[in-house]
Image (tube, rainbow, N blue to C red):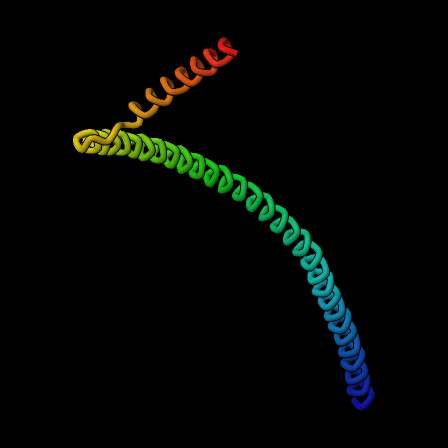
Length: 141
């Protein structure tokens, strides 16, 4: 019986060594598979990240273009409105100035002051008279 027990113990030891070797080999393969998965995920993750960055740059560029177009359109509209407003204000100011000039001229006429038109007409007649006097002086000499 001693031999049979020793043989059984020996067989158990060999079976245990075989199982431990299989577990060790399986553990190593699992470890290597994990490392491989990590490496592959890292590379694919980086490639995916680069793709996301590229897509983001495209969206940003397109967004800036749309915003720029919208801002230009708004600025153009503001310029149109501003131009229209300036023209309206200038026209109104011109009307006010003309009305004021007419009233001032009437008030000055009432107190005996000549108007600008009267002075301009007088100036033209004075120039004509001066020319006639010069012409007469030349004919006398």
